Picture: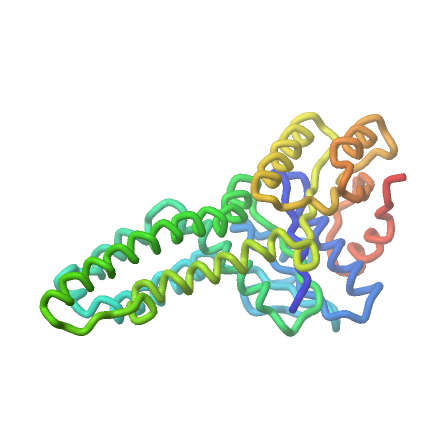
Length: 297
């Protein structure tokens, strides 16, 4: 199972650049097989690596593959699979006209977040790579995505309790009619909910476990970036997700701001990516620049 490095931060702080530098450092300094993934709808990796990228992985080095996920495609695939599953559960679906409701549901709020979660889930299940670096969308979408397993667990638990009551009442009627009784394990809807509970529990545990997941917070030295980073830290603490590393991008050195950041994120390691006036593009240039990253003393 791959170790995930999820890069999170305010839009414009340089997550794509920093995640690319990290991927190249891993690829150059180790013999591990590395994958760099973009979940950001506004993909930037193709500009940084100066080549066309797609949901199909592209090898930019022998041990570094890069891909840009299509979240809309992920959403469509999820809707199609769920639609087929519900048709199997509800054989009377034509009367309910499930197809009509799915045509409306695909425009519902939250589908982009769920598509992002599906990408994360695929990354956790990846067996071909040793390390996976993930370039995420801006803060709001990413935080909602990371919160989904915890939120969904709450709802699924409540739905399981409701379904248990329904099965009990159905069995009371069946008992009066001398019909066969069904256990919860025989109920297809309850089995589906149980599967969802197991799935979201596993995702939640992996996001909270630093042995599986490293959360990397990217920020700049300015006040606005610092303030949003503190907000991200607060939200992740609620989800019991730990920030393992903070990268100060466009750093001007061991400044008072850098020291304040180090104090505010005392449990995380701090790395400084120096300010670069020249355009960073291409594997060679990015690889050379990655050697300039320093550890905060």
